[in-house]
Length: 269
Image (cartoon, rainbow, N blue to C red; front, side):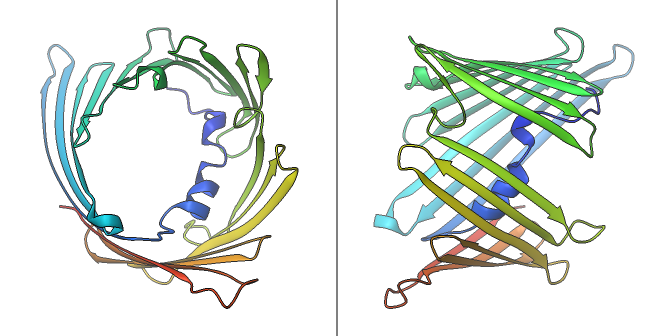
């Protein structure tokens, strides 16, 4: 693939993760394990790669427990990912690279919710990228995006068409603009801002936040939005890849309300 500006969907993803990921309001415990194997043939220039993963999670809300089993298979330019969860939902991702040079084709299929599937075509160029996605429903939405620039600087836009209306963002109701700034060369300290415009309620929300790595094992995240909601996260790597996350959120405009707390323990091999 080309080392170009990347897809428009990737712009703002880091900012979104910083403002939403790990901000919990419940207690969660999860254990993950996986096994993988690869077989390569230099003479035939072939590679087979198989990986399976098992994740079991328990959430405090109602004592509900859920789990899933996933398997991945890679052969040359073909990638297959199949996941089955305890609610009998089956999701499959099929990806093919370079069917057309510098392109990637992705099909997402789900059972029993067929209409949530989609077919996406991505094209990469040293100074541009294009993406088109079509939903697999009776009235399929069509999304289109493009990006111009370099790996360090990019501009882009996206639009969608849904049977009878043209949409931007989330079904024509929301537009988001994100900004992210790395405060050090190692990109361990980050400041981020996001502006959200919701047309149905004529409401604007401005959120600022960031993260700071205290050391190699401990990370602190903070966010505050224009509605007065303040959130904080403390995350510590107890052993390699295994994390303890403590989060809190409260309304600075209603200090009489009890703050929300979340706790997560994720164990990985």
